[in-house]
Amino acid sequence: MKRIHFFILPLVALGALLLPITLTATSLAPIDNSGVQVQPLQQNGVTYLSGGIGEDEARAIEQAKGYNLHMMFSVGPGNKYIPDVDVTVQNASGQTVLTLEGAGPLVYVQLPPGKYKVLATRNGGERRDTADVGNGAARNLVFHWNGDE
Image 1 (cartoon, rainbow, N blue to C red):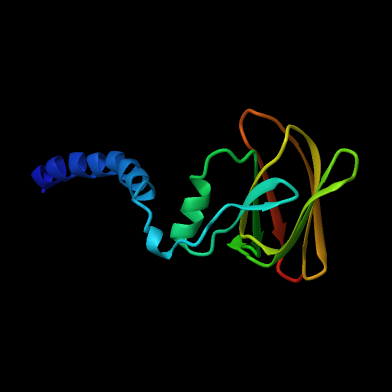
Image 2: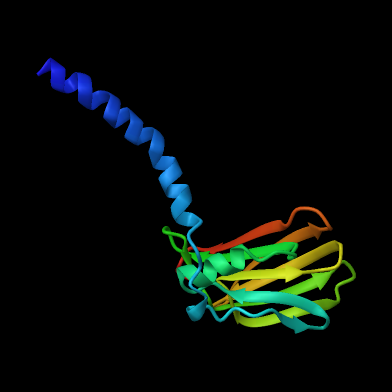
């Protein structure tokens, strides 16, 4: 019996060490573009992506380059992605630069550097946040509803 434990324990330890590598490799799997319908859109000279329904579409948006404001919308205790959010983005002077209806669950926006106010509305429940975006790393905003809104 001791001999079995002597051989099994190192194998279990090796498997535990390789698990993160296996999980990472899975997330880097190729995207099936045949089912992905995400295309850059424009409004008022602002380029954006909206979507993320399904794993391939979500990964396609998450891998998109050049967007300096990333928004994610979720609901409930399980943080379920939701695609039915109205979004308004205003610049520092209060001018609306982007208005989307039924957006999400992911919205990536390319904005000129500056400070912005974001209003996300779902079933009458409002969430507000601000974003100071520039040419560096993207600013990430997460909007979450409890589920009763």
